[in-house]
Length: 368
Ligand code: ADP
Image (cartoon, rainbow, N blue to C red; front, side):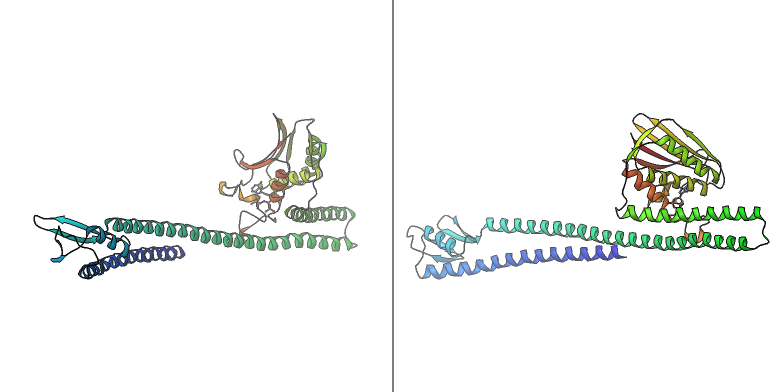
């Protein structure tokens, strides 16, 4: 609708500008024509007063009036009084010479040239203005749309984060209340205590992710880069995550790397958490290998996979693939945002690839 409005407004603007230059041209033409009569009248008047000299050898006729003029004086008079707008022509017949005063063709050509130039300028200005306004409107739409999307994602984030906090807290309270019951057996108590600890880990991960994301976003995260054994780090991460499910490990030994160990641990842990979360209990692989001057870390699962259209967007802050209402998995949309920022800070790249026969492979590539 707004596009049609803009196009109509510009068509109208261009039309009125062209119309204006057309009427300006006609007006100037009319002034020249009207001036011609004034010029002839003055020539007649001046010749009657014998101010244009006398040429006794020739008889001159202007519109059948016999004039006695000196051609040079007449030319000068017309030229000076009417600023080159008109010229005098002498047409010789057998017994007489007819004087014809007419509009200077150079002046007409100049007027035509100016008219054409003016039209080109109007066209150019209208098109340029149209492009500028269209770019502006597009920019405003784009910003509003981005703000709207971010707002929706933030609302989704608030909904899910409240849910993420409430669930483990409620579970821990219930388990502690159960432990307080004197009839509960020691074995059951130990199991409930372990489950409560698991839930506190979940809360810890969540707060850590939120804190890291905020620090990264505002440039407050202090990267502390030092040499360390990346192969060992992968093994440690594997050990702490293997309780979550079937996690296979394939690590090339002795890969030394200079980077921020803490943020890289968070990044790979986030990928593993996602792999378990979105693969409904199937196997997950963690791989580390070197190829030429690059190191590759791969986290693969055989879960639902990421649709092609979402593969770039999933790294945006708060972005989650489904809508909050239809969502069945828990999450805040911060995990991959942190991973991407951390990897970029290490001059690396991350991409989501399709796993075969199903699932996703998140591949991190880091320069050595
Ligand atoms: P979340 O807290 O929602 O998991 P992330 O930033 O970690 O946030 O991931 C963003 C979105 O990317 C997720 O909501 C999910 O839709 C999709 N995603 C991430 N990892 C996987 C995966 N291994 N398999 C399928 N989808 C994934």
